[in-house]
Amino acid sequence: MRCGPGGEVVTPARMAALSLLDLFRTLASFSPPRTRLADAPWETYIPWAIGNGLAPLASYNLEYVLPGSGAPQWARGQLASIYQGSSNDNVLKLIMFKRLVGQLEGRKLILSGAAVLAESLYPHIAFRPVIELEVLLRRMDVDPFTGFVTRSEFKVDDRGYEDAGATRVLSDGSTPILLFAEPLGPSSAEATRGLFERAEPARLYGPSIYRPTPEDLLMLSVLSLARAGFERPAIVWVDLRELVLGAPTLQGEDARPVDPARVLALATEWRLERALWAALTIVASFFPETGARVKELLPELRGATRQLLGRAVVDPVVGFSGSLTGRRGANHLRRLLTAGR
Image (cartoon, rainbow, N blue to C red; front, side):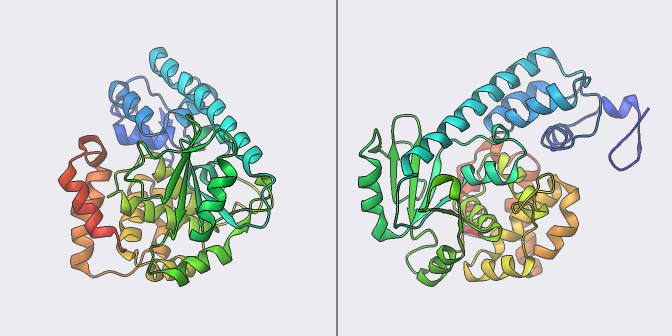
């Protein structure tokens, strides 16, 4: 017999009854409990994990943290190939971006999205895939930055990103850079100004590159979820878990919990109270260890609103039905319910 993470006795019968949720929680943890995974639903989990950005972290856990888990070799092999590819791809993308913008002076551009999340929340850059780079900038900087970047191999090309909400997309054929002017909408100039004023230097990338504060990063992640109708890869729930908890496995300035008062003020200012409530409720359902922190961050909503969000937004995601079915009508409804702007 073994003891589970809560101290309970885990019998062989229970270990054989692992669900997709159990496997997700275990392999998405930065400190997974030792357990037997031989009878887990691997046939379902592997394609789902690969498609949802979870494969690199899962592979690391299976190979280095849980080597005796009993996971089948075919599953470990598929995950390992993704891990190696993600590690190399992330490093190359970020080195390329540093070389591209390192000499840029006199501007204030905010690097956001997966690149910042991977660097500031995860113990290793390989654990969080970086598919594209996101840059927030003032509208007056869009054309100058485009001209600066297109002196290299980058060209304007938004193929595949027509619905991303980006003002412009630049690509060298392998790495898209999404430029977001007025990220909070054309009618939110003051809120956008605050976002730029609070941004912190990202010195690794040169004097013109900044990154959002943890509170802004959390709310930008929620904004992205809302605009996508909560149809986002499941790795975003790991992102939000770490933002809520304050990246406790890391050390230094990145390892601090978000300020609840600041987050709630931003949710009101950005009109994202419903989206924040839904996102945090999902995080607490997936990762119970976040429960206490989530309570401090939940905005107050009417009971009827919470029930509607629960049925239309939270339940499909937590039940793994929303992202697996991809129902267009459900996606549209979630967007209407949660997008505040």
